[in-house]
Amino acid sequence: MRNRNLVFLALFALGFSGCATTQWAPGWTLAPISDSRPAPADALAVARRLGDAVDSPETARAAIRAWETVATVRPNDPEVWIEIACLRLLEGAAYRQRAEDRLVCYIAALQACERAMATNPEYLRRVQAGQTAWEAAAALGPREMGAMHFWSTGVFYIFRDCLGLIGRIANVAKMDGAKAMLERMDAIDPTWEEHTTTFSWGIYYLAMPSSRGGDKARARECFDRAVALGEHRLLPRWGRGKYFYPAVGEAGAARADLEAVLPRDLDGLGGNRSWNRYFKADAVRLLAE
Image (cartoon, rainbow, N blue to C red; front, top):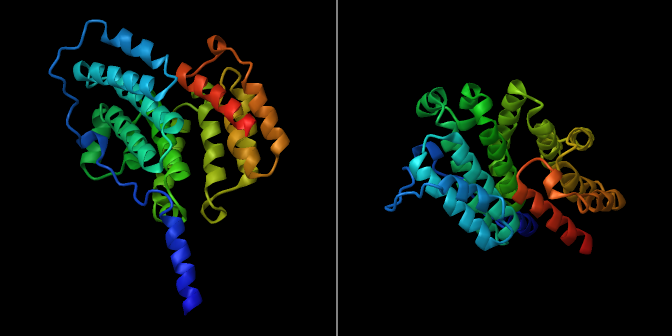
């Protein structure tokens, strides 16, 4: 009995080594962002400039505030919410260290994605009728691809950064939701952003236990294909070097991927410039460990 209790306590501790819950108010239920001051005429240009220049916690917050200012005057523009989601994820992944702080950022990103999705009237009707975000994704189309991408990415980040063993078990349905989002994206356009979903599938197969569909061989196929197809993207090679190769014990291959990230010129890359800046900085950090 004593040994059984010790096992239980150990699992309990593992479960709460990160945040224990991932519940949040759906983005489509939240009140619009309000600001008593009128947005300046150049608010969109300012937001884009600040969003491209993020390189610290302070610049991340400034860019997010700028996009929130745009949201006060363009609350039904999905691209505004997608930009907010993108930057909130970056803030958590790159510039916050504690699991609790990261979870705040990731949930805010998920809510922004859900706001973007809810600008689609049929999606809004479905979630108001009781469907989950991923069930209602059947109503989404090309204009919401970014929202679906960052929603699934946010779920992956929560599992990686904020949950212990028991927390992951308790919240595995969220990973099923991320899978459904990826399936919807592939049904719309599997080539979107140089096959970005191919990389996301690699993360999914790597993160899930084998009993729930995890498969390292399939993960390898996805990562390799994402690198081959994402010619103008840093994400696939950085991610393969950071996540996949260390997980399968291939340190030399991991190092080669991270070294390949360093010389890439930001001006010649696709994707978000501030994320690409983070990928390069993170590669430097990982190589120095």
